[in-house]
Length: 291
Length: 287
Ligand code: SF4
Ligand code: SF4
Ligand code: SF4
Ligand code: SF4
Image (tube, rainbow over all chains, first blue to last red; front, side, top):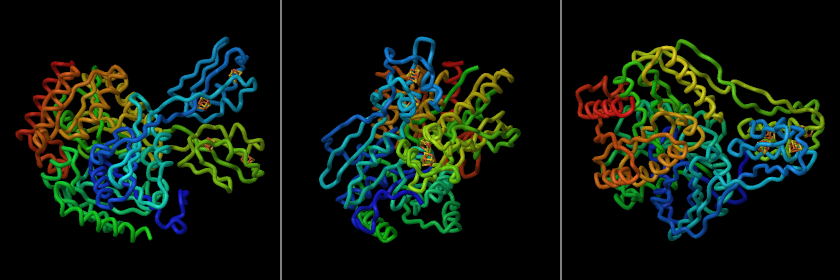
């Protein structure tokens, strides 16, 4: 079983719904933000830290911005005897010990802490390396938390973890997860009560969705599928879901007005108010599935 | 030999469709799919696999219950919350840092290396193709990407190819950095949306950070011509050449459904002509 952040039986009101997709650009952020708008009072967490977009639609007033670090070693050469232990225990080759010098390749360091622990001479101190930052803000009753990875930074997972640590108790948390099935996606969806997979009914969409399905099954996270641009493609996605007993919880047909609204950073609900009811119905459906 | 990597920042903007079109248009090239998390290019290229190898990378800790005396040290030291209360390692959470294995007083922990994916060298009607499949929920996609690129380059050198054409991955993190480092050109496919602009900006900055020359295509420009102009202005002020603009066209989806590149499926369509023009520009500007 995956560890649950909170036990929904004791904290009935705390809910974590993650919105993911195998393939990028299928409408994950659209679903996440419109669901948040429809609920009205919710917390949206943007865990797509490489290319965060939720803020474009939510337009929160940012009230705080804080850096996220990972610990990396710093060597005090006056204490070091160049024994080489630190390099030996580092699984990522982030340290090289020379005759009279120790080199630390900070971008390779995963911050595991082993080098500091094993250094007999206490020559290693951990210092912070910034990998990105977290912004928090509000828009009416909506709370917003978003992570942004620094340019050139490879390590997204620790930042996502930090964003997830901001999950709020006794309310609905909506997580906008990164696309794909990588460690970043897994970090983002872990401990969700339910995961919504947004896909498009094309061969690419289906191919990538199947991979996400396998990941979610491995993580034991219940999930359902939303088919976006449901009339552009073929019916293989529907057939697959039926065969696999995966609930299709919503279909959103292609509509130039939706595409236009999206391009301007507007929500669907704003452009086509009839969608508000549909997203409220989706929320009710999700609640039922979670309980 | 030039290495061209096609990227999107934001996913789903038409990166693979464009790569597929170039597969049809370019002569004397090796193709590579570096979007190893969500590899789709094979659906268009229909590869015939010639060579298959395991991808080994990273390790996972395994605790031998017979040796473990439940002292709790490993749990205390592990910074990735990978060891449960009953001292079993969650392989998905384990980062393979070896810390616990090196520290365990009972020597009860070993690091095990399992195959995490597969790499393929294939033959396609468009030429050789290197691709991969990452095991479900495995990390280290960056390493697999580097391997795929390396293999494609080896083949390219042997065959004296003109091009290595790479379908990159979305985002700006680890696999993307691995896809583009040292490439001759990063071609960004973007859409005329606020998010498209925001994401293109981040991927362009990433490419600049790694000194990779950037060019750009605006896909579905007619969905919001105003935003499309904005992106062109942005490119102008950042000295990035916009190679072309593609109109929204449902034929693209039809081609995909039929498992064909757009050039094969609708060679005389407007979008195919536009892509041909773009390819010619790439030839004159890069080769
Ligand atoms: S383990 Fe400590 S003493 Fe040995 S080389 Fe590393 S920093 Fe120096
Ligand atoms: S903290 Fe871990 S990864 Fe970083 S240098 Fe030390 S041993 Fe290597
Ligand atoms: S450190 Fe070794 S002996 Fe102690 S709990 Fe962990 S595995 Fe068992
Ligand atoms: S190898 Fe590292 S991440 Fe894996 S269980 Fe041991 S300490 Fe934790």
